[in-house]
Image (cartoon, rainbow, N blue to C red; front, side):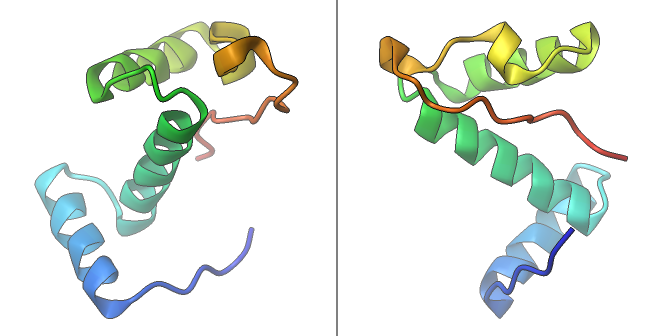
Length: 85
């Protein structure tokens, strides 16, 4: 675990979203990080597809590498995107 420094404006955005979605600030930030990482790794997916993938990962207990191969079939390392609680 580490510390990530973000701007005050981004922190306020995270705080607002965390209240709206009944998440802790850390959980909201982690959600956005996971969605952003998947969006960069798989630009062919839209937000709805990414949310479905995250739901599938959570329900199946698998990791993202087991749920979807990287775009283009390259040798991109598999990243564990399972939530930690």
